[in-house]
Amino acid sequence: MIPRQYVHNPLIVSRMAFSSSAAMSSDNKTIKSWPKLTLYGDLNMRPFRNVWMLEEIGFGYHHVNCKPWSKRAKAVHPLGKVPALLVEDDDNQQQFVVVESAAINTFLGDMTREIESNKRTNDDTINKPSRLLVPPPATRLRAKYDSLTLFIMTELDFQALWIHRKHSDMKNVFGEAPIAVAEAKRQFDKALDAIELELNDESGYLLSSGFSACDILLSNCCFWAQQIGWLARSTSEDEPSSPVAGDTTMPKSLSPKLASYLAQCRRRKAFITANELRKEQVSERKGKEHHRSKL
Image (tube, rainbow, N blue to C red; front, side, top):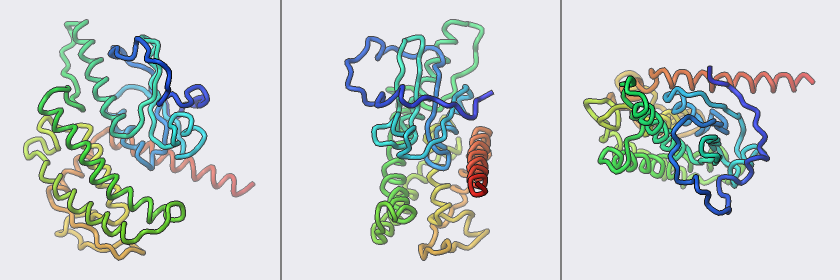
């Protein structure tokens, strides 16, 4: 069973991600067996991508629910941002932190492939193929994976969705900037058109090999866009596009191809499990708020 919550002492790993200490001899050693994994972050934010990835892998992990800029977040990230993944590798006597949702998922995919490859090497009876959530390095497939991952993070996330989050949802913190938000919406529309052309007709996903970690990023960005009214929730044949309440921006229409892609991502068992964990987190938070209101 995968633990739902793990209370970890954040002071132990303070500034570990960007430590200035000299490199250890174990830094370049490949992880050969499953380490202890602790994910920090709120599942209503980008850490959801990493829980989804962890559920796809199917190995146990711990989750620490924390908001950006909280004491726990600042303990594992110098800017107090989430997500952050603490990796405790007893075999090589090292522990380190990986930050940024795309980097975390790529690391998890690489590590899974290496561990499964090591198991097959040591046990000839294991014939199960490796889960190719992240392609091997120095291959054409990996080059496409890296290109798509960085494209999604820069063109859809950072230059579009995050601009909306900062200057619309969090305008009390970062300030209101309607012109920047409007331009971010145009950027999102253009970038989504471009990456939709990359969907493989045979596999139904971004890579010809099938579902991968970059599909987690793309579908999550699309779900995010639907929540803020930038992307229609169904195809134009089913439902006319209309702006969300309080926003005059018209949602981008959802093509049948993209609608089918998002539907199959939502049907994945790992997504369903991750979404249930997110709902549990929301329910728990509401319960605590209700309890405090009665005090």
